[in-house]
Length: 243
Image: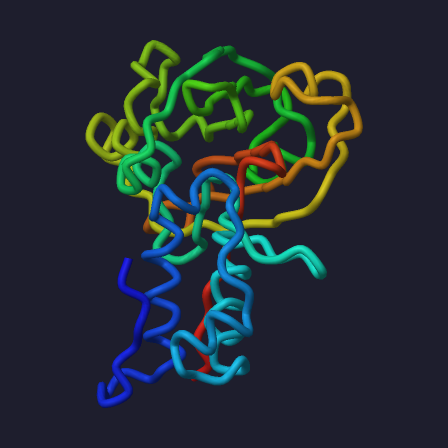
């Protein structure tokens, strides 16, 4: 692999270094846990300062693509699923866009009486049953996320739908419910016995917990969604630009 930068290019050196590192990450030579060249050697090969190189390294560490350990070195991180908070899609749509094959391990549909919190979100009474959808999903190797969704009765969902299809495609194409807004809350949890059994992990293991409040074009609540992600298999990244 050619390791050099173009000092005459209009592209800043740290961005060139970042692009080079992204290519190195994809190289099978570094996919098996082999350390990247140390900072001193790599900066010397590229004829840039360690500060410039570190700027590029920090970006990829932040994205979860590299792991850097003091006194050990830098290596490619194990493959993880990543989700961005900008221009959000349904889980199925996002994974398809990323070329990540997803397996459905469990799918359960039921009609339940909502708890007060959920009924309050939907502005309905607790004696009105709503559709509950539970899905355990992941890669072929095993599940990494457990979703629980509740839907406002106005959606028209019957529970007989093919929920292997992308959820928001079903709502839009079959029921003319167009989703426009998502509000999310993200926190860390320890896996209880139930979640640990679903995600095939240890009780007390770290879990990324996400609440998603979904609205239609008229800002009416449509879905109340809970997501439990294995922390060692998923990254939730946020990108913002200062205006």
